[in-house]
Amino acid sequence: MSISGIANRHLGVVDPAKLDPEHVLDTPAIDAILKIQPSGSNALITQVVATFSDATQDLVGQLRQLYEPHEIILKTPPLAHKLKGSAMVTGAKQLIRIAAELESATRNATGEVTQDYIAAKCDECELELRDYIALMESRYL
Image (cartoon, rainbow, N blue to C red; front, top):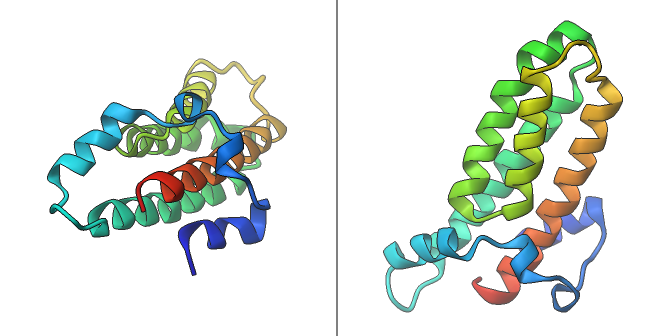
């Protein structure tokens, strides 16, 4: 099954032709991966995207399990920071933005960051991951 096939089971199908690559993909980051990939092979980029997809889904799952305010404040920043770093390396532009918002909101929180806010950001992450995978598969895999 393709990487998007796995994501699509949970998030629905998206037509990559309807997505704006400039909005979704950080081309310089993707180009950096492609530069170290052996010529004529897409094995490295495929593995990077698959690993990123798995890691993102795991991190989002961990974020969704945070309910108590003290847990949200303590555990969200490192999880969001890890997601942001992975998204930067793999060129997932909108996931970088969402992770940075999560990290910033919880590092500077005074109690206004709720489980509902975390859940909404997790929903955004999942949809943006779906779009990222769809574009990556259509262009590079």
